[in-house]
Image (cartoon, rainbow, N blue to C red):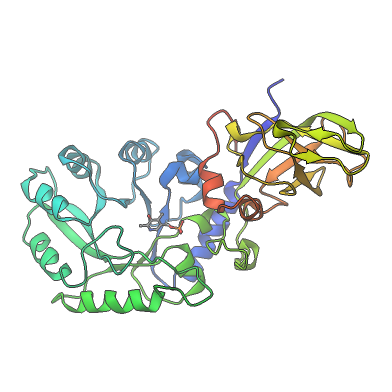
Length: 363
Ligand SMILES: *Cc1c(COP(=O)(O)O)cnc(C)c1O
């Protein structure tokens, strides 16, 4: 028998979440973001789950080619653009679109001999200071692109830093939009726009030609803070369920200690369940005592430190649980964001960190 730990991917939930994104998109076309192996879900499953998307967006060139091998013929967008001249050749040959965010990329593009012109997404830095041209340099970058025979279409793109903030943000979305409008107005032509990520789509009404939802398609909330909005309230369904089983049960007395570092001490006689899932599977090692876990559908919590291959749970409220009982680490019945919040991270990181040793199925 294989070690009882499996990730189940729910293709129908991916389809459902994409439909939700389309509802929120107010007529804009939808790039389904599939970077990081579709947030840990697998590219082949993304091609099925997001068959209705207008395009797929990612950052890895090998994965982009894999999408073509998988039969994806619609647009593909490289969100970080190209890294060297050979990437440009791949873009021209495989019809990949890409962001242009730096002077270095402009120079590379100008020097490239391409078999076909490429569609570019000119990125504006509206305050995140990660990628892009500032609003006052964007018109110049545009003019240079416009003059290049290597360039087919040009779309204007930016990325929001705080679309998920319910409280007033240090860099409010409205301020980024204002800067975007100023930059766009400095260009003597109305270009198609690509603006919203999941948070902006779910929490703001912004007119755009293209939107770029990622985490919402995987049933994660983009509003990951303690006061955030649970994914379910946005009408999203979990797309990844991580399940294991109890492989041992320990009856311990008051004063006994559990796990590495002996961090947990039983306050009374209790039963401890041992689950075949640890940090080498992608479960967060820093998840503290009490992090929610389902045992036979009953909500209980982690005790002691997460080890490499195992973690322990409190069975005080699951008297019928025994070896072989089903354990849900996250997914259906237990939102991944709740586990992430307890562990001091966000659902995105947990999905993406699912370890290669965990068998994945979509049955
Ligand atoms: C990852 C990414 C997205 C998707 O973000 P989510 O928060 O997962 O919706 C959109 N745009 C860009 C440029 C990205 O890098």
